Image (cartoon, rainbow, N blue to C red; front, side, top):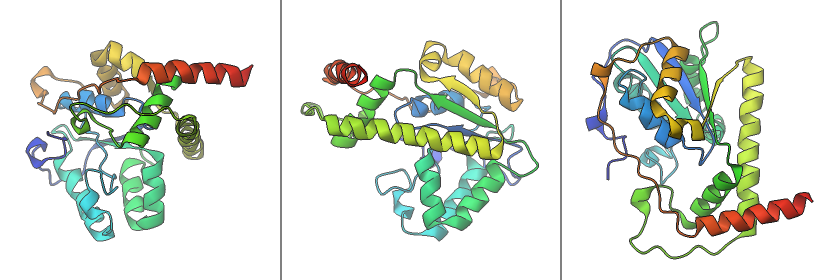
Amino acid sequence: MDTGYEGKFDFPARTAAPEVTYLLASVPRAGSTYFSHVLWRTGCLGAPLEYLNFEPAGPYGFAAHSPQVQLQLWRSVLRRRCSPNGVFGLKVFPIQLEQLNRDNPPLLEEVLSVMLPRGGERRIVYLRRRDRVAQTVSYARATLSGVWRKDQERRDPAAIEYSQEALDSAERGIAFQEEVWARMFSDLRVEPLQLWHEDVLADPGAAAQQIAKFVGVAIEQAAVVPVPEIRKQSEGDAPAWAERYARSRQSSSS
């Protein structure tokens, strides 16, 4: 199963630095993987994946304990994941920036100098999800099961036992990461372009056009590139979880 990080999906390597950069800021289970592939497919908006994900189970887990390799990877993706029109996008969660700040400050400094240059254009696209119950349930279930993508699912997955503790933790985690983004936007004095997952699903083409207008480029049909398909995960008993969790939230607020 292709993840999208394989070399066969690279754009032609560049020698020059990106001309336009933007951050795709989000939090877990807000549909950012799907949206990143929508933008990537245009061939005009870079390939905004998680190039700072060095978790052991992540795309660059082999570099988890090597700051130097992480730095080399970053410089490499700047050359080969920049679309031919000079646009480079980066998808990132607050926890990834926090981890870099702790484990690899030189890389964080270099990332910020490219993506949020002082005295230059600072473009941030902020993707959120309106349905907080569904987002929280998805986050809690993925944390419990370890299944974050369709390709990780077993043919006959076991039911996940309902956990109020996991749901409360997931809700706090989402709220905390959104607060981190809010503080960062305020500190940087940046007004991000905010989009909602539900609107992206309803009209992905229109969402991509919004981003193109925001960063100041045109989407050309001839530039479209093939990217891995993002398949929706099986729901399993998630609807039952959502119904029960929604009831618990109503009870606690009454």
